[in-house]
Length: 562
Image (cartoon, rainbow, N blue to C red; front, side, top):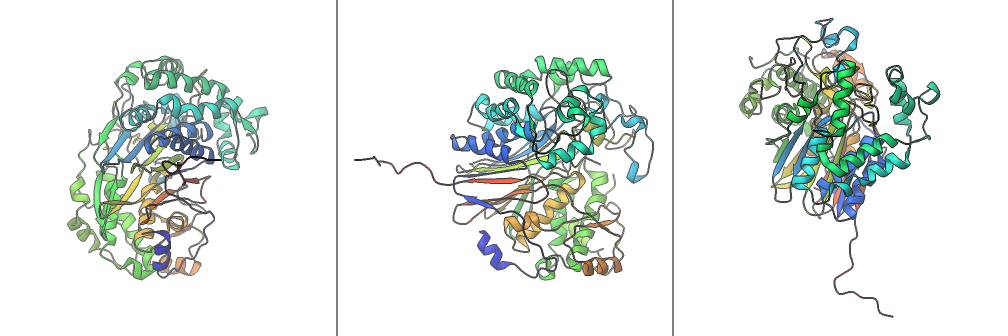
């Protein structure tokens, strides 16, 4: 459905809101990222004749320069590709625990939910011991080689240009630097870049990264081998050996991406596709939508107490099952078919009481970081990419590999630091994740592609956007900007646009209400319209910018006659 039709179908809206940004519509391609310069990089590649995979990889490399606190070649992520022939491919480039990692490698401090991952001296969060074997660069290069059309040197050129010539710092980046200035100050390279004169770099300043530009040139010349067996890998391994980290040359040589099959569910005539474990999103979004399908969600009205109560109960059910069911499938059996079955949803739905909030345990026997980024790209050939990537925490491990400009991830924080559990550390184990690069089809045709950063709040927010589009008839812009809710069983978080009267009614049903200025991060989405055009949208929660391409070449046979 196109945006005009969606607006016409819009039902009752209790939580009213005004969109702060405008969408962009084009016929020849759309790029949506969380930074305008990264969107420009992807668009540059599309305009040069590249496909969506080329453009997505170009955008991601550019984001490593302009969003260095969120994403990097030493991170990890998940890409969801819909190819022009209709195939869906999930490229798992998530980070893995190094070969010398052990379940008891950290001294834990608590068994309480809020502080469960805390360890002595924050060693799983900051510093070399928090870094897992990176998979991002391997995933990007593999996607480009297998499904792209442009040379790596062309795709990486915009990022090199941005690193060499510099770019203007946004208020968002400046605020992120201020948030973790104490940790950045401990590393000489990061302090020199982001704390000039000892203070956080200010919005409006120009940031140049010559060391990182040189690393990007090495990657352009040698591909992923520059890291996995080349000079960048040697620099990383040497730094880890000298500073107590675990990643070594053997870890880098052994790393492999995994191509996975998408999880497929259905919801009110749409087919919903997302990544499988170790990602939570495909399984648990399908599960939650199956539960919601038994109710007239549209009739409840967006933002009503009934609608939010139902969302909250579905979220709690999903998180209860996620705790025992979602992990690296190479190490833990994940009952995907049961979790996404309509019958299992009916069992769970039968216990929902619309008059009161409940506590939920898992129906089966058996804290990630918000600092992530997402790109959504479509081309005129029929290729679509939704890719979520991260170095995990703000500025990852908060160290820089000398001479390279590269920042390692702190993905080890995502593991359970207590030994003996499904999510505990084991050598080679992939980090589990909430990344949700999702797509929806109708009648076999792509209808929507979307994703966002935000840790545990990612897949619940992606699910709400799909409900906004399908049940509430919102446009893409409305769907990504609409106020969100979140809970995993504790307080029910509400964004400011949810009315106080609704919050009071939810409290009367037993929900513990917590107001949050922002739930999860900046969502990007593309809606595929009936007339063949595409509409890109980005929300107010980040620097997201959609760029749409229209026009094209001259009509064949046209010449200029004087």
